[in-house]
Image 1 (tube, rainbow, N blue to C red):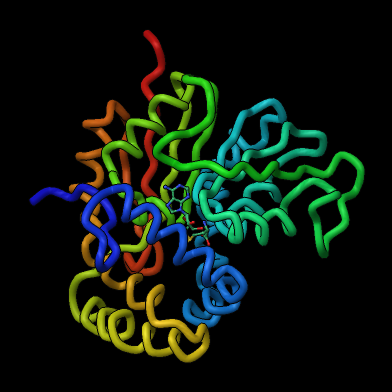
Image 2: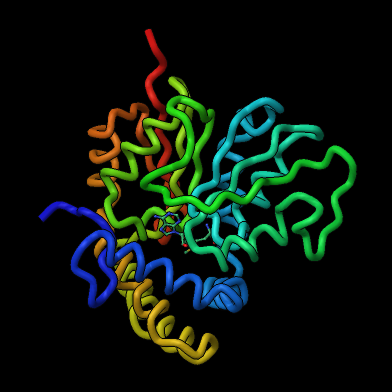
Length: 262
Ligand SMILES: C[S@@+](CC[C@H](N)C(=O)[O-])C[C@H]1O[C@@H](n2cnc3c(N)ncnc32)[C@H](O)[C@@H]1O
């Protein structure tokens, strides 16, 4: 059966699935960054930076309207901000889990929401937006760039997510989706062992919860492989669809464009 969307254990429809995903991320928000960096041996930092660099040209335009959706605790948002010029229009950073978004806003938000880093005058920042990726509270054709990292896989309906991104992008606007995938060959086998056995056990140990890091391998396993995902992107009306593998295909960046009006 073709992929429809994420279905955490015990959920049967889209509404239940979205609620379960939101509750799960809210519950791990305080430990999310620590767990992420330990379990990925900090490789995730490289992936965020590489994905941001792919959109350097748009990020360099001060007036560009940019959304990082499923921003979580904001590490991709921070990588995007590094490439924004001084005085640039703020990035929108959206997520539907308030506890994740609050943590993110402490890093990337305007001065009154920041916890650690002070903002120099004119320094770029992001505005937190509590929003569901499937129902963005944004006008049609309003964005130059939508990016998302490790969140798309969690959407309850992948096709609806892609259609919503297409709706919100301006003609000629660009999309970037950073997601895990399952590499093939011997490396794939070794990685599968780590991903399905070691990672959930470590997640349980450090995070004190079973759910999220058992859900991770399941959700990656049921996510469509690159060729299928690219076909879904084309079906949603996007063009120039491509996938660039990162770190032997453990993760990869999907890119696409909403066709310009001719
Ligand atoms: C694995 S985290 C990724 C966070 C961050 N982008 C990163 O790279 O670390 C996935 C995030 O997606 C968010 N998310 C999942 N489904 C969503 C939806 N339908 N709308 C908005 N956010 C969603 C979750 O709340 C969570 O914060």
